[in-house]
Image (cartoon, rainbow, N blue to C red):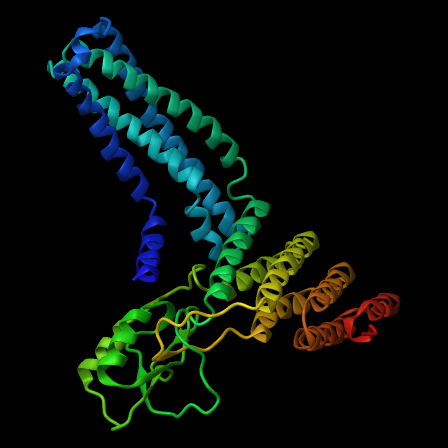
Length: 420
């Protein structure tokens, strides 16, 4: 239940309208709650506040906040366009979900709503003397929040949409997804044994990427019907009618159509992938930025080198966490889940850069040094995979580079030539 609520909460949190709506409701409540002071002990001790001063202050806020909110939306749209244009369209979701920008827009719109509601209530005699003072205090608090938010937002908007900031956001999202998967490698289920028996496949009626799997629902269905479920997909896998979502181990070789439909509903499928619970998507998105930077039209090897540095940090995290002896908690013993393979992570990260940066000696040298650093952290399996990618990258460079000296220098730095 916790995983499901977390998924839906994060999905809702990424909606641009959510925080402005919450702030609007809070601002309406704040504007109206000042009337409570008229029926409390405050009515005997509050100083007198002129109604005209409140009207002037609220008019100032209402006249400026809508303009600032429109300006904020325009700046955010420019930043979103820049992120999609300079990095990759896949980064758009992370830029939109920027908390500082969402909070700023919410504060501006909320302040505007607060001033309008308070002005209407004020002109219709809703407040008494204590209400005037309480509204005056609340208005000044709102004004202070607006100033503080504006200063913080100006600093963020100068970075929002810039390539360095976008790369950092993607690396942070990938880091978070990796930690979540490493903490629970089988999503609460159990591993698939090598001697697992085949059964009846369950196919999807939708075409798209798996974003979330309701493990609790699968466990409930499997327990009630006395069978095991072998997942054929995890978040990030593309599903089509010819690829089963799961395999059902049955004793009597039969399952009702109703149960099949219930099983299918446990898989949330969308047209695009999500950074949440899908570490491979973050690696792929970073590689897309690197490939774009290495294209002849952009010719920015420095960005590709920066992304290789991100890969070293992410793979070091993955390898070190995998090497720690952690006891995996099994919540759903009837659901068997495939594990993310380290070889697939290497393919997602390094193959595109090795392909598109094959003719650039600086990028290829950095790539070889990165593979050496990762191999040093890992075990024998990691060393074998890293050495294979080192060899493939060198072979690509050998075909693309025309200057023999560069090839010789690169050959000396290759992992597969290094003595263990």
